[in-house]
Amino acid sequence: MVPRAGVTVDICPRDLPIALIGTAGGAFALWADVPADIAVPVALLIVLDIRVRRWLRRT
Figure: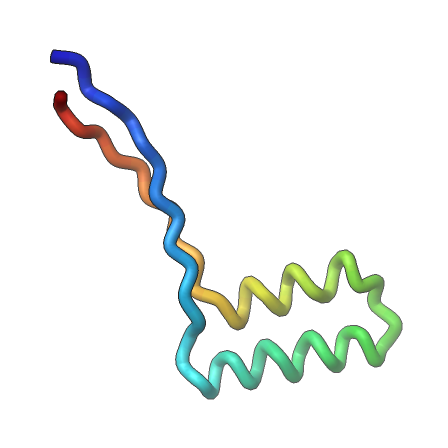
C-alpha cells in the first residue's frame, strides 16, 4: 500500500463586512494610483477565504 498525496484548494467568499472592507480597500488603492497587478490580488485575498490543504490517502 502506497499513500497517495493530494492538495485541496477551497475558495469561498468571506462574510459581508469583511468583503466590503476588501472591496473598499482595493478601490482606494486603485484610486491612489497603485498598479492594478498589486491592488487586485491583495483585495481578492481580503475578500476571499482561501484554504489549501494537503492530505495523504492510503490506497
